[in-house]
Picture 1 (cartoon, helix red, strand yellow):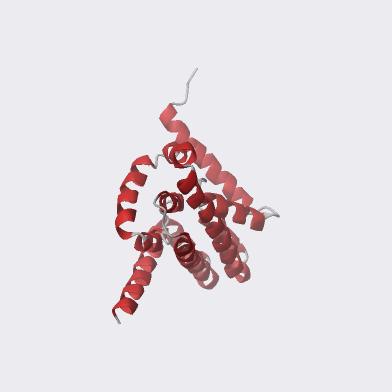
Picture 2: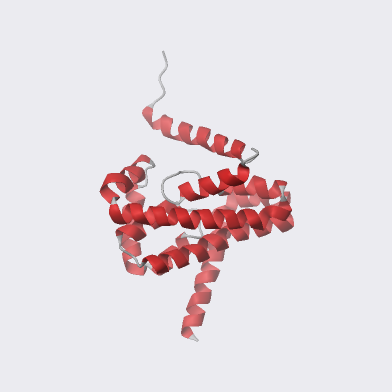
Length: 204
C-alpha cells in the first residue's frame, strides 16, 4: 500500500483547504464566510481572504468596496486576537501555530526587524501577502503599543483590500490573472508608496 510522505501532506492539505475556501465564495452565506476567513487569517488560518474577495468582487462589481470593508473590519478584529495570542500565550499557542505552518524561522527573522523598525514593519507587512499572523503575533509578543498597532492595522489592511477591490471594480477579469499572480508586486509597490508618503510628511 502506498503511503503519502509526511512532507507532502502539508501542501496537499493546504490545496484542499484552498479549494474549500474557493467553494465558499459561491455559497449563499459568502459574506459571512469572507468575514470569518479574514478574521481567522490574521491570527491562525493559513489561507488569505483574497482567495474569496477576488471571485466575489468579480461576480458583484458594485459590491466590491463593501466586500473590502468586510475584509478590513474582520481582519483588524482578527489582528487584535493575534496580538493577544502573542502577548499572553505565545509559548502555549503562538509558537505551535507558527511551527505547524513552517513560519518558525520566518518569525525569528521578522521579530528582529520588528524590534528595530516597529511601526514601519506593520505598515509594510500589513499591506503585503506575507502572513499577517506573523505581524500580529510579533506585535503582541513585543508588547507594541496596542492602540498604535490597531490604527496601523486599520490603515494597511484597509489599503490592501480596497486596492484589490478597486482594481477589480474598474477592470474586472482583465486584471484578475495579474492580481492573482502578482499580488505581492501590486501591494508591495503600494506599500512603498504609502511609506514614502509618511516619510515625506515627516520631513516637511
